[in-house]
Image (cartoon, rainbow, N blue to C red; front, side, top):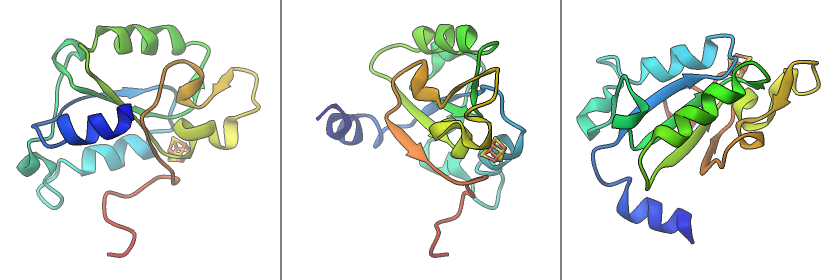
Length: 131
Ligand code: SF4
């Protein structure tokens, strides 16, 4: 139900995004940044990256959630004003990926905070799968 409310009320507006690397190899981060390049140009839809979680509507999380980064990611989540949405980008953020059972990884992002949307892939590309 909350997801339907989010889709109807938040996604149609200009979406300001705060991007967090939770422990990623940078593969997913590069693909996220690629959406802002002139080729994909996510800003034409009003989507833009912001430098502070306090200015954001959404968190974009990449990489497995590590023990070291979890407290900072939780603080970033709490700094985003309500209502907020969270995207887990890539196999690592959605479930820990290949690192899920390593000593310093807690798992996916939803081990630390609520995730609204999961985008699997290693790394997921900005283009549609049918393109
Ligand atoms: S999903 Fe793949 S590209 Fe993304 S952080 Fe994990 S290993 Fe790197």
